Amino acid sequence: MDGAPAGDPDGKAEDDSDGRSDSGTEGGVDGTTQGPSGPSLDSDGHPGPRDRKPVIGSAEWDLLTDGVRWNAETYLLLGCDPGHGPLSLDRLPDRLPEADRPLLRRMMTDALVHGRPAAGTLRIRRPGGRHHSVECAGEPVLGADGTVTALRMLLRPAPAA
Image 1 (cartoon, helix red, strand yellow):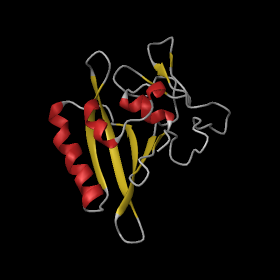
Image 2 (cartoon, rainbow, N blue to C red):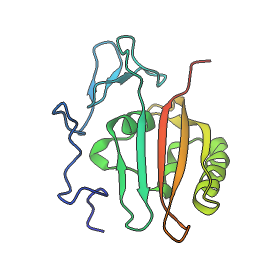
Image 3 (spheres, helix red, strand yellow):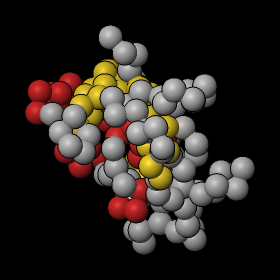
């Protein structure tokens, strides 16, 4: 693979229809982190007080090309720097505390080995050692022969307890 995200032959970041690109994050005045697409999360990983729009992350891992695509909200929810690019599936456990990794393994086995949808709530390790919960729902993409060719996942902040 040439390093470009799947479906992006020029290797450029996705460009939202409103003209903003998927590059970087900026700090908000109220302690939230402003994502490139607008939504912000507070230090607990929940939408900022002025955000009315839900924060929904989407990610796709293409198993045939090793291509990975994330929207800006996924970087925000997983606490990753867009400048470093999206994480491969084998690096995803690095964002979780050890106790949550078995659930992620079960979800990945359901989706990638058995070809079934998988869902769960995972704690994401944030910079500074804090954690926040993210609800994840993944669905395998099957090829003509029935084998899994990709994994698509939606993510959102878990409701506050």
